[in-house]
Length: 381
Ligand SMILES: Nc1nc2c(ncn2[C@@H]2O[C@H](COP(=O)(O)OP(=O)(O)OP(=O)(O)O)[C@@H](O)[C@H]2O)c(=O)[nH]1
Ligand SMILES: [Mg+2]
Image (tube, rainbow, N blue to C red; front, top):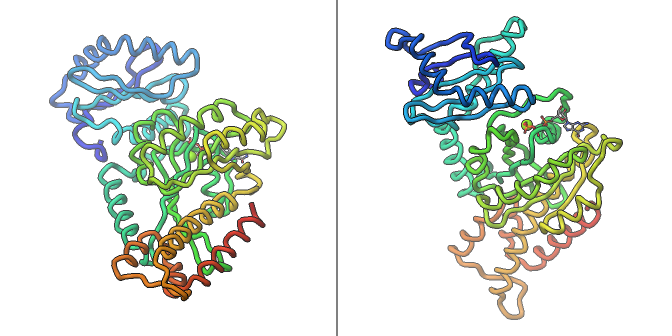
């Protein structure tokens, strides 16, 4: 309640039979709890019926429900309870959702008798913080020559396909076997270096929560992505069938020259494979994007996915530079003349290290550079 603020009026823990187990209100002096529970129960009777049904089917996760006077968030709290957050009608559900989700998980563990359960709710990136991050990114992206210039790379795909595992493997070189669903998004940074090219691409990696209850957040989190990895699990057909959905979501809000790759993950689970390599490839061809198979567990092709994206970014930048420079060719000379404003415009597209190229303004260097780039790509991919 402290974190969420006054838009959170009350929290109830309800059993699957619809009985209220516990209630906490912001200002119990002002609200008659018994009356409140009564009003709530009749209001939410229908919803509770659905929850009970979903419980029996084992499919209930979380949901929201609006009335004229209140907004409700229902969140599964273990196998027998639901945590209901009652909000002011103007409350922003997206902002509050991660808190209720985390709290419900703690409630479930308390009910299970799992002790001790820390009452502390970790800091969650909220809308205003998101704005701050966005502004910071815009600042960095407007200064490609600053050492902190970064490319936003988003990892998307259904829940449990291994997005967090891929990011963790790439950034920290670790793998965790137990599944902890990502809440909202998790951001990390890593530089992808190419010594031969004397360059590096800095990534800001946005690892998105794939669970459906976060879907309202996806477009915001994916805005202005420069690159994306759409992950599916080769042992889970549904996750593969949703690749197109993820493609549509990201292409709507991403940067126009978005670089995308599909990753069929968990290839260590060969015995449970349901999506063949050919099927994966076919879809990638249909969508016109690159395809790779990976395993975050055994570290197969994980670095390669990120390196491939980095190479495409460099490639695009150099090609663009080449095209612009070719228009500026001065007869019988290998030198190009670029005006100040043009250089500024060009720089907008370049990583810091490509100064090496821009600085020389020499075709030979650029062509040599492109050749090096193509050789690396050919040898590796
Ligand atoms: N065998 C195997 N298991 C994997 C692999 N990658 C991830 N996992 C496991 O799959 C489960 C889900 O992985 P996560 O990385 O948390 O999945 P996610 O896509 O981030 O899921 P959300 O955050 O809910 O969207 C975990 O138990 C991982 O250990 C893999 O390559 N092979
Ligand atoms: Mg995750």
